[in-house]
Amino acid sequence: MSLYRIYPLKTGTIIVDQGAYVTRGIGLGREMEIPGTAWYVTDGRRKIMVDVGMCHTELADWHHKGSRQEPGEAVHEQLQARGVDPAEIELVILTHLHWDHCHNLDKFTKARFVVHSRELAFARDPIPPYYKSYEHTRLGKTPPFAAIPLETLEGEAEILPGLTVFPTPGHSPGHQSVAVATEGGIHVITGDAVFSYANLVPANDYQPFTVMGRFVNIVESWRSMEEIVRRGKVILPGHDLRTMDHPVYPAGTGN
Ligand SMILES: [Zn+2]
Image (cartoon, rainbow, N blue to C red):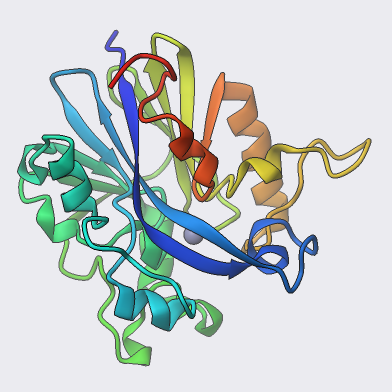
């Protein structure tokens, strides 16, 4: 079986209300900076991305006032800084199609793109409160995935040896996460099924998690967190700056 290394890439900074987005009801009114994260995954031969991160500052600021992408933070620039040409990427797995996970897909000229079928269906025809999340045409935008040939999955799949995609709905209708085999055990790249490490802290003595602020279905979201914790020795949340404390995972395996 292939063993992989995982590199967190920071593609920008999003300004959110902590209680509205990160931890439901906890920290309401408190502004918080979170990273727009993408993940480069490689076994030394195959080159894979899980999510590709967010857009340039002007559009990011439209989503969440004050959000930004500094020079050099775009996903292709982050890869090039690590000596990887985006054209070398053979597979892009999208956890979901919210704006901060799927910009610059056109830079991956030789890749397959994989998303869950339910996510693609909803992203193309969301309910109005989610128009902004998907940059819907009704708001005068072009969805970042509109011109990309997306392949759809229906459920769990070992998409490459040691790389398993599994459904984790709740944050969005067709969300999926990725279990990655590494020499340090299974690492789960959660996407936004776990927003932050703060969601993995018990809310009280009978709730082992803290619900995130953003979900379409709280029951599915909770079950997805249970499934992620069951599978993963190491959990890598979608929007936690602390994931950047290590340049590579498994932590301590060099650069
Ligand atoms: Zn999201």
